[in-house]
Length: 490
Image (cartoon, rainbow, N blue to C red; front, top):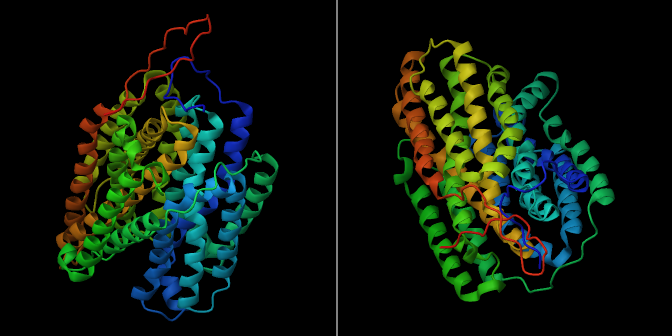
């Protein structure tokens, strides 16, 4: 069976047009999920008012969606082997489309929460399949450049989502925030039917029911516990510790079960023997913490300390998104040429340096300067995600890619939830009793320092990533071996 290769020096500088067509097809549908994950953040107050529900109830509009994502992600690999990639992608798109239509027509808070769970089921499958299908189509060539394509939705969502949400609320109602998904879903499904290869199920293996009952609830309980880490008790309250410990026990049980079951497990964690996958997964936890954690801090800083509106704070975040997009192509090119280690190391150093000014930001810091810093920070974070994803897939067989996609997606999800929970607890404790912008700014400074710590820890871990690939010698018989890197295993 053919295997995907680590970034190689001998690969062509251009993505094959057939692979690029598949990638664009997948991205069109994936944009609906990425935007939907971030667009709702600016509508919490409107939803609470229009649906006559408390903020504690409305927060389940986001929490229920994220929990459904967490529960669904682990079964994506099994579902692909049972249905085939094309069928599963179209099915997931249709589930998300139905959830979006129902959410736009919700009549009260409970109905909206239930319909968001349906969206989360489709979204969890799609987010995992996005990297799986594109990487399988690429068959190991130009992994860095492929990752730069896969990163387009991830780069656009956190920045344009809140802006789009602010514009929709300014011109219409919250219902349009879900209806805007419909064109992406319809276009994505039509393109998928036309452009995706008609693959067949690879094997009809039974669902690892024990693994599913351990992993999915484990991830969901852990994410739920982290989402409850607010207020003065922080992580010490029972509502946080109980699901965290329960989730941790289930995850440990899953690890023991899958090591015993082997290749028939829901997710084969033995792939973490690949040093590149293990190191990239660790770095994705830290990257998720610093990316999603600060994506929570930055709008709050602009709104609570600088007095900006929801739309205004979203517009101020655009430079970070621009920086992410600017670095994407170069990061992919250099990852293929020099290997993931050098690119990730430089990217995390840039992101670290560009976080320092926010650790000193006050209520009167120059906004033009801060927007320039956000541009640089976006360049660092955008460049960091490319080699991390590329390294995670290097040296894997085609059949192993779905398992790696799940591991990568779960670690990033847990990292984002962990970073968000830690930073919000730190902010609430540091800003407790603050009533002036100057006092609030001091609390945000402490939270940004912790964000800086997450980024700084990642710098030395980058040294564990694969270095510059070297070509193999020609095989006997005169046939030149493809230039590829032997995967690191520990």
